[in-house]
Length: 72
Image (cartoon, rainbow, N blue to C red; front, side, top):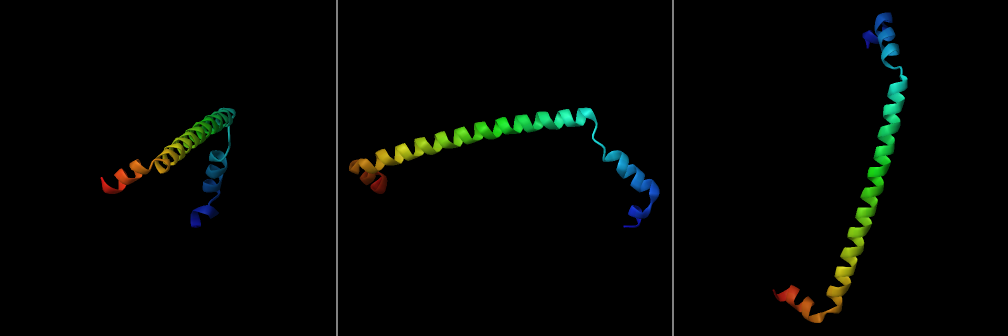
């Protein structure tokens, strides 16, 4: 806490807290990449859910398969 009262320490914090042009460009690129990754993740999650629901529907429609899952 005493370090916050030091003028030299506060000057260092001000200098480190600045964003340069290349910092903003890097941050924009990361956001773009992250948005793309989230999109791919969501599409894959929906595809897996769709396939899983389809498989469950087929399993429930077939009494012999249900009996086989229960008895082995």
